[in-house]
Length: 195
Ligand code: AMP
Image (tube, rainbow, N blue to C red; front, side, top):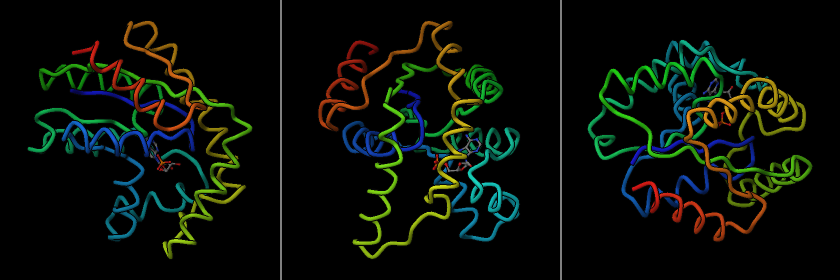
């Protein structure tokens, strides 16, 4: 099963993706996680991406498209994958359509989590508090300024993807303000229909 989780930062994509990983045994491909790993490992891509990420801006399409294309070719993606945080621009969505076609693959579902934007900043603050309480390190872009920029980038560059996938007939929208278990149950219902 190949699916995309769409939604603004803090919508719960990561949490839902982790649940799907456990239930379906397919990997979560989070371009944010992959880029953070590149930064932590000090790779060439990481060095180029760090300042952009910390400022809450988007890394170039060319970089993320290549990262995703390479990752999809790995053995653990043979049964499918969950894309979390990719695509984030219409150009990335077009590149994904093309790369999947080249690999003889297609998407099963594009699930959008719709959330009330006013609640997102509170969710970000809670995530920071939970991380600190658990002794973890806080993301460089989980601060009010970068978060506002991330939301802005989302509105301008990622929100148009809803129209893109509505047009292809693949988009399904879920109310992401419901409790996490209800959102999970609705995602499972969609996937059951898609199979
Ligand atoms: P995330 O963990 O998905 O919130 O991503 C954190 C940051 O990584 C974003 O604010 C961007 O700087 C970068 N990033 C992640 N995915 C992408 C993408 N698909 N396109 C461009 N930049 C991305």
